[in-house]
Image (cartoon, rainbow, N blue to C red):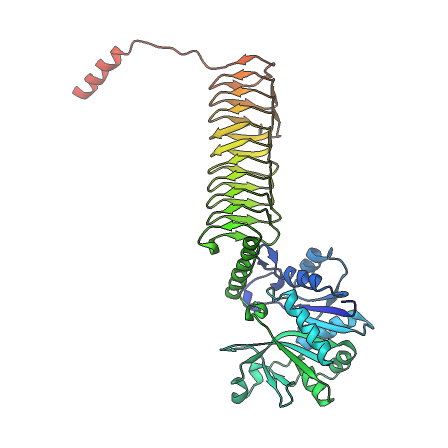
Length: 465
């Protein structure tokens, strides 16, 4: 839409959030609240984008500075939506198309709804078009009064409405399409003679009607689209709606989600292949990419990781910033920390923790081990209770285990150390020096066995005493 520019109103402090951060920076399903309307406007295809900022502007600008084509307008004082829109229009300069005005705290608004509003605006040749909804209980929303000609006659804020006007159930969503040239003139005519002492953007409707210009409206098909966020309760409600939408999208694309579905969280940045099964209580967060035919067990958490096809993540495993190739089996109760790479067919079992470690194809660490700062070749077996001692109190060091090595249970590998190809390390060993290829290494103390009959008589004397 080359002739449509967007102004996003994101300057509000959000005092009811009870927070020191800007309201639009609170996360909704893993993304700052403001990220959702910005992504929606990208889908709509607006030609220009201005975000009006105020409270917490540095944080907002830093987070979104890389958005293509974005510009910021500073509302220095919080003097109402009309003043915020004026700041946005000043940034647009001599733009002469349609100004699309949306709120930064309405993350559920969809591109389809906004595109339909633009279409109605053009079809009606309106000066102003308002996105509306009909609520059984409109509460504190501004009321939309429709005139006898079918156009919007005026919008009245709930605080300023008469009792009869409060009976109206059609409400203003805060999203508008406005002819840019008309908007400049109308904003210059606003005053602050109202209960809040603010410049209301809604007053442009009365100005348009006074000039004999048409004002159109469009009821949303789904009232969830226009739900704003003013407090933490509404934040949670919006996230629940967004989470349900994301789950449905993946289900329609061939992903099975176990019941109860609402217990599964899939953040918006995740990609999931077909025939993947996600059991209840699992979370897929960040920019994770999950292959096809993957099985993710109950309570598992996967964040910013890449899983290949046919991977099995057993219950309550945690995978963070890791790469997992095809056919790998993980868990239960495993933890893969940042920098872990599991090559095809590897296995990491219960209560195994990895960090900056690569396990080669077919290698196994099935029980109760810590593998950190390690490079492990193909076909390696790591016995239960093995740890890489990678930290000496000052620096981290690497352990290298070459192909085909067998590490016995309860082994400590004190880095830096290398175990050569096809070597065997006996159970209970502490390895402090390199082990050559095909060698056998063991460092256990010699077992001593003594006659224990004297111990039995001592126990009897202790009882008698």
